[in-house]
Image (cartoon, rainbow, N blue to C red; front, side, top):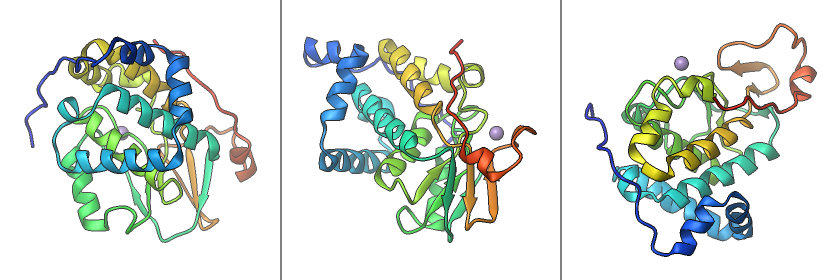
Length: 231
Ligand SMILES: [Mn+2]
């Protein structure tokens, strides 16, 4: 799969009110927060089905659905710690860098969730051609199996990096007028992703290192959220 996904203008909205909600952050959040768990579960399962059938994000996935998934995952990340403590067995996977076929191969070999538990070490986006497919499939599994599918933050889950290495450009090429809101919401979600995983109380996992000022597991457990300003 070497061909880049074709550029596509964002889908037209069926009603003016849909667009109003889409562009209004507080209305959107209110609507998403009102959805019952069962509805979110069905929504995420459908998301996984569409992404696995390789229909392509531009054609098959609506902007509102991307925003809803980002919202669900942001809530999950906020409810879990920055140091996630899990027990094995778990499959640990490194950088995906927008390589959707590689992600599918990983699942084909290791078992599609929830047959296996996963800990991804970050860098879902940038460099490759399938930023949205990779990120959204991972987020869908995170939303569906929040305690069995773990996603750490890599250095590319930061706006000042992924605005330069392909992720932002892909969203703006493929999602047209709704790109700024999608990019902004995904960035806010990335800001609350965990940064360290501790498996079985003894295997410490992270993307690429930690500050020398963090000296103990309790320092990691007590880490506060932080946000970098978008460029
Ligand atoms: Mn990397």
